[in-house]
Length: 196
Image (cartoon, rainbow, N blue to C red; front, side, top):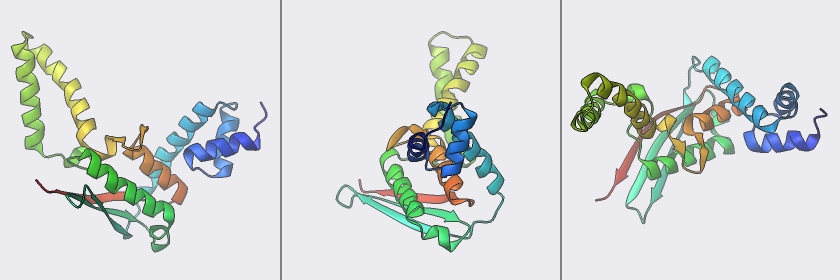
């Protein structure tokens, strides 16, 4: 199949990947747009993993204030160089993450940061619900693992569906930015304040 410049342009608009990366992905997938998007996402994961060991000392602290000043978020997003920290793409990403945190209210950035007592409390609730519904202990515990996975995907920032595009997780969005910028980028910490 012939890969047209229009196809490359469309894939670039969907993924923000470079022109050559888009052309290569379309060539490898025989012009299948959806498979090309998936391939670029996988490459983004690989690039992100490769860059994750590099030190990120630059970045920005972004703010988002909502609801007439009754809800506010501070988020620190870091990268390797001051050059990337000053780009519009980086600033827009940080702003979007601050807005997402305001809207969705995650508990932690990743699973590793979720407090153990919170996990245990949720697990106990799910086990008691299953046992009260008449399930034996071992079946109840198997049911709980699925519910805990769902719970973690709802409270961990990187696993949440991005508020402005439910087809992507926050991690997908971060991987796309890493692929585009060519640097290790991460969300280091956040604080969400709400009146009332």
